[in-house]
Length: 278
Image (tube, rainbow, N blue to C red):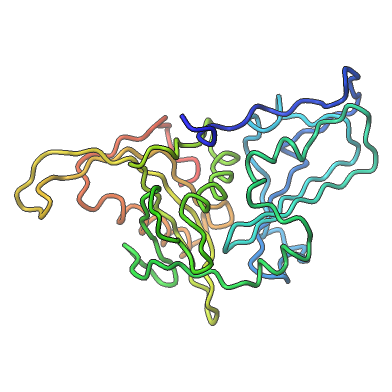
């Protein structure tokens, strides 16, 4: 299994044996904010952000130690899914949890160093090079891309592996028991849902699914001769788009229309009573 196929070890306090006394719930002090534009970065709208549901794979016991009045804001550009991190507190004790180190394995490869850099990323057009989506509805598009594809996913040269490394963080903090797939395995396929921005040459990330195809039963009516069998590993729609009328309907319709076409059987890894981020 490749190093990037599993979450990194959980962060602990970094203070040479001295234990801090202050403690914060990571679920309560971490905010993840979606920015479609520079305007969103400065907006106070609650529709733009969400709190992670599961952070146990990032910090030990879902606790951050050594800070008072702590607020951690993880901004991400909705098109390129590049990140910017802001940590605010009124007091920091010796031995406090190293928050930067805890998040580095998950978003460090796509982390903007300055606010100015991030704001430029938010405004930069992000357009898939794949011209034909496997399914579309209204302004939504779903693309199927093999994880080992060498072809750039977007016009700025971003590959599917690079993009997948950025978006999988959202699965980790929204799906109970989620784990990163083995990107060294060439069979993995990624289905990505984008929303085409109205009046702008830009696409925004809405959600994704990871699939592992197997050969199914022979079928003479198909050109390839076989129906496909697919294991669904993860299905994620960003919290901002869940239960939102047309957006939610479009995402569900496209995802299942794309995945179930020519599919014989769809076993679901770690199946539960319901999809947690359907």
